[in-house]
Amino acid sequence: MARTIAEKREAFRALHEEGCFILPNPWDVGSARMMEHMGFSALASTSSGYSWSQGRPENGVELDDVLEHVGDLVLATDLPVNADFESGFAHDLEELAANIRLAVDVGVAGLSIEDIRADGGPGFYDTATSVERIRTARAAIDQTGEDVILVARTEILLTDPTRVSEAINKLVAFADAGADCLYAPGVIEKADIASMVRAVAPKPVNLLVMRPDATQAEIADLGVRRISIGGGLARAAWGAVMRMAEAMKAGSFEGLASGTSNKQLNDIFGRTV
Image (cartoon, rainbow, N blue to C red; front, top):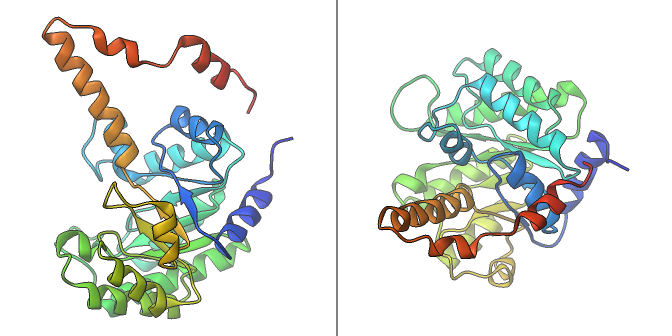
């Protein structure tokens, strides 16, 4: 029997309370259903992966596109879905709140709001403005009466990985403003990750995997509660396509031997959702 939206949200909340879980990032319904088949406990959308699947650059899609996409992911599986909601697709706080309520309406179990400016200006919102936006997001979710995880994230380490102290300070402020989970993609060093976890404890931290040689056990030992890969899975898929295409241009079709069989794919996708 399919789980209800409320049951998915309850399950997602429980995942954040103990242990360390992997949150893969599918980019379409097929990849979402594949991740469910592979045994993962929850999913997160990826703004970059989805944009690429539409033939657009990262951050190249609009609010309506994202709402439809995330809603499709919610309906496609029994797993909770966390929406990569970028900067909420709004600079104005009332519009931000309205957009968040729309995301809640499509059934997400969680959504992330980042600090990249949404008004077309360069860089990031300062801490005070970012905190005000997280408070707005928290209030918008609470007004719906739904149990949706709010993930607050700062992107500053993706442009300057040396600003760890600044990132940690922002996350602490976000936690105080009502965020349920904290996220600073771009943190790499184990000591920095551990410091981040301690700073916002007992609230959970999401880690974006930046080093392919890292293991879940090592990351869990640092106190991280959830692990995501952003557009990594999509990049790997596109990489395989590009390598095969280059080989075909050179006259070789040997890469076809590594493909999954029709039968296996039909068996997986033939199951009733």
